[in-house]
Amino acid sequence: MPENPEYENLISALFRELFADMGEFHVSADSDSPEQVEILVSQPGTGTEFRFNVKSRERVTPQIADDLFERIASKKSPRGKTTFVFIAPTISERVAEIARKHEVSFLDHSGNCLIANERLGLLLHRKGFNKKLVRSSSPPPTNVFSPKSSRIIRAMLSEPCRRWQVSELAEHPNVGVSMGLASKVKHALLYLSYAKEENQLLTLKNPRELLEAWAKNYPKVEEPARFFVRGEIEEIESKVAKWCLGNNQQYALARMSAAWRQSPEVRYNVANFYVRSSAITERALLSLKEECGARPVETGHNLVFLSPYDSSVFNDQIGEPQQTSPLQTWLDLKQMSGRGEEAADAVFEKHLAPLFESLQLP
Image: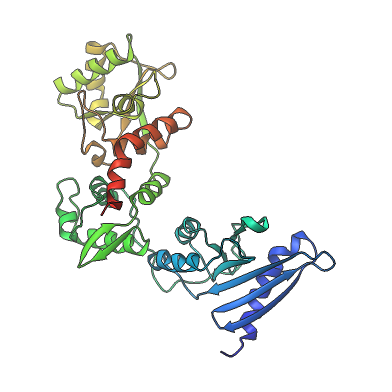
């Protein structure tokens, strides 16, 4: 293959910039093909040198990243002195996440990178650089974590092994969205490499990755009403649940109130309820005060009403009193710091991990 001096110069300049803050380094490049460049970085007088095998592409999407990085990772030698690095003009957060999963080093044309070789004691990590704006040839995918779109995510995560037709997702009783939106979400999931399609049927590839991404994009839950009620927490929860039923108010115990019943690892002292807006009208609150002794307070509360960001938070409730599903409970707990994380882990291991692991079984 002919040499490509222009591309060699670009790659050399990127590595020269990476090592510039660590002293005087010499960078040389040799290319066997337009997509493959060998880089040698050496420090004069010290004998220190690093070798890099650079694989480059003009564009990489999450949809192809899994297979691409798996092939690159398979060529690495655990005892080799050469560090494999993937380079592209831009590398999205999702593609970077997939690269980290396969332990593939990466670098973009702006200098953002994660290059690691434990054997050589090498770690270069840079982010936030945006020197070159490269326009994508594809429009940004649909936001799969918006309230309506996430109904599809919830349905698929609740049945992670199921293979779906788009029409089944759109018409699912817990989803209820248009065929157009369902089709857009399908293409976004394929683009982001959270799902794959076989024989026109959609199925998840790695539900844990999708769930973690949803948690990062989950909206902040509003707390429109806080109260103080005399009594023990479980007694308060029982009274308020009875009040909801008696007044035709939809409810679900949430956060720690749900976690304690689903996987009792962390104790709590505030009762949490998802309720509709009709439960916080002046008339409803007067009834709640009369029947349960709930007094609105700014501080010192032990009862909180939460506003659902979408009606789907009430899907797949379990237990008595009614609780949010383990999936919803986990999402809510992940938004809490400290003990919330601990409780989230317990709920995941007991309820979600077995469900997701079944996807890997033959």
